[in-house]
Length: 202
Image 1: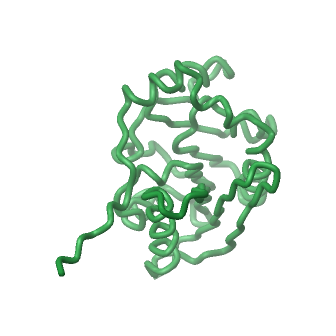
Image 2: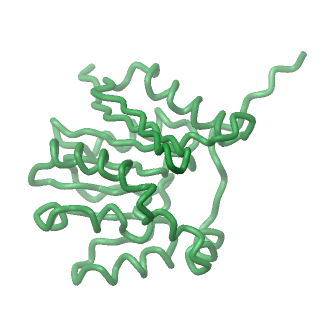
């Protein structure tokens, strides 16, 4: 029997994202049901942030930015594929801190203390390889924070993709899992996995 490899990411494009943001498809991400997940991500940021700040890959309309302290906002950079999302996010700051870019091609311009992948690794093929690329832009004590939504329907391809990504991240041998948290919203029946990763000194 032929061994078919399961697709390891969800395909998307800028036009699709722009249309979805224009149609308010992603407005629910600012609902209270998402708040606990963002709070965990913010907690890790607060623990590890220093002078070089935060890179938020897949920043959307800047919901994470909204939750940061003023001092954290001063050293924040947000990147998203959607021009529409970046336009909305950019209205939140007088500084040029939100940029349009593809997570699979973007090259950071500096090093950061924390690089956040907030529900954005879904769209990355070969997750360990991509995280290794980004880890080159971490400060010596820098960390990666990843949040991944676990779909309710275990038969859904997206569910399998996320489970595989988590296994890859944890077992690739390139990163120490400093912490791993599951957040479950009982009211909404939603679950996320949040990882705190540090590049191993090989």
